[in-house]
Length: 113
Length: 117
Image (cartoon, helix red, strand yellow):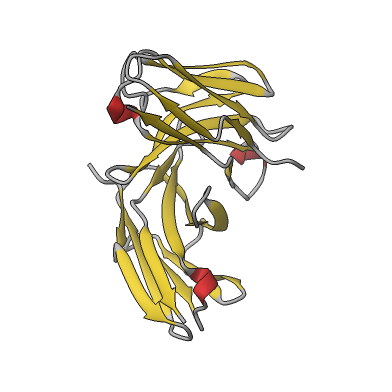
């Protein structure tokens, strides 16, 4: 069963638009939620969120977690063609097997000039 | 820092052959992960090690897959015999112990693109 569900699966926008990517999860013993960006190579880390309601920000990217409603959003403002990538959401589960990440399928973002 | 190193970057082999993928984690990282990524299933965790010991191998698809970590700086993922459905990109990632700090980031290698014909 899917533990981490991302939406939309794909998104096409023009430069300058603002986008919101969604990630919902259903796991036991939630520890943290992570966002990764994957261009045509390996995923690279963006954010880790552990507490509800605290926004994390890096330039034009920001993310927030809602542990009550079990979801997170990733916002990108003033998008650029370089933002085109697959954005992956992953959930870290607390427990005896530390370190296991459950990944969503990703959102394919395409930014046109 | 060279990051996580994987070899080969591309591998094309025939069905039935043995395939060995290699990974060198970032020095000092306690955890090493092997993932497989396909269009159909996305990114899946196959197995991970802590201090060279396999902790969770529940993602290994079947007995044809095996992984070893003989020391802190080297791991292998072996498929024997390989099948066309094993075609995918295989990523290795490493991280510090998440219990030691507030950040938990896995650093991914460039991946090995495996094609089994």
